[in-house]
Length: 189
Length: 318
Image (cartoon, rainbow over all chains, first blue to last red; front, side, top):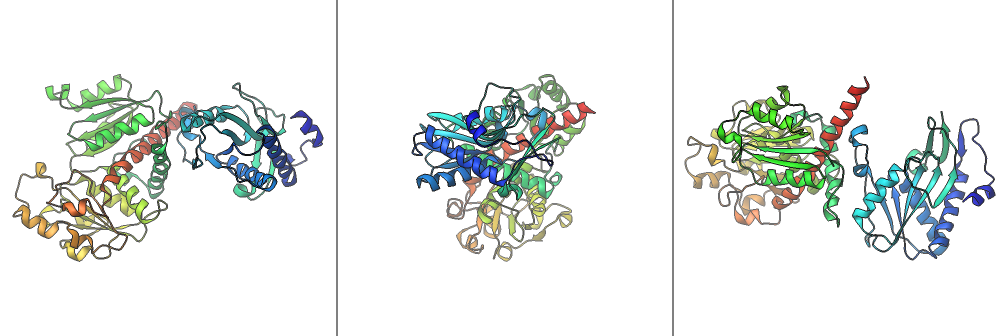
């Protein structure tokens, strides 16, 4: 992943804290698509699962990209991990979002979990728990748009859009057109 | 929401949140592993002072699907039959570390007393108290109505629901009137004058004594059970006369709107308030109500225990 990062000509945040603009996000998504296809030897066994909320549009974009490159429609689902979080005691109940499992299920497939930001790793831990209740994939991989470090669990991503070194106090804001009306990634604080 | 004691406690938004959450949780039922880890380590006590089958097992299934530890406590075979008071029972539960108590009691207001007496600190969920309220039943009825009438989304604005039968003794009717009103539906209560509660004209609904007059064009009709165990006076001349004037048969069911549905909170007296044809017919959603009951109760347990966790944290940080 470090090579890919260097090829992209990594740049620091500009004055507004923006680290990726719409074109950057489009390029990164395309690269991740190619990496997924390379690693899985084609799209035939791949199932994409976007983690709510912003992992879902990212998954849709990657699915669209695979359609462009290979002419194949891969199964696409969404995962809401609210009920699997370990912090109900700390954050309380919140409204649930849609969990949508592809019709053929995930058994014996290569499931690529897709999320916007990888931080503590707790969301991914919860997603893995949720996934194991849905079925038994042959392999699970993780693709994220941004890896900002500070892991609290032994979890890493297989495909990373951009590594952004941050301090714990900073916030990484990912905005996507489908949810926020604009495509950008910014570091705040 | 710290407790769920009355349907009147729910705002339109809170009610919709419960219904939306129930809709998502319902999908767990279709999965290979019908269990979520959300309430692991929480204790839910089912405290039933009055007989109940479906409400009790529905709450049991809901608590278990959310991985809560469940203690069932029914009056028969417990110290209550030896004369233990509600207070002493409550103190026992508190000492056992219950996080939520689901209570069914023959006295109206018992859950309210439990929640506000200071005896216990845990969440209280009313599973039916006397002739007062049964809020989770109203929620599952609203969920079923919404599923059939508006595709499982939004509220019930502009829909008309007819509730027929023993309104006087019915906690289901009261909770439904309050909740359906909050969700924008208009409700017509139909019963013989002897089975209408005093002060019904202050409820947010219409009142009628003529079923044939109320049914045409309604989106749904909810039949109430004639509660013979609560009747210690002659409220109507004969069973036959009751079912002729207030029973739902095939002809009456056909007066409903084209997409109209038939509900019954159960248990049914077939042949009395509803004929077997209608109970098992196309429009009947009575079995579905039971399934939806589990989903709605999962949503209530999750939202109440989650909200309490949040409130405790806010308190601690102040």
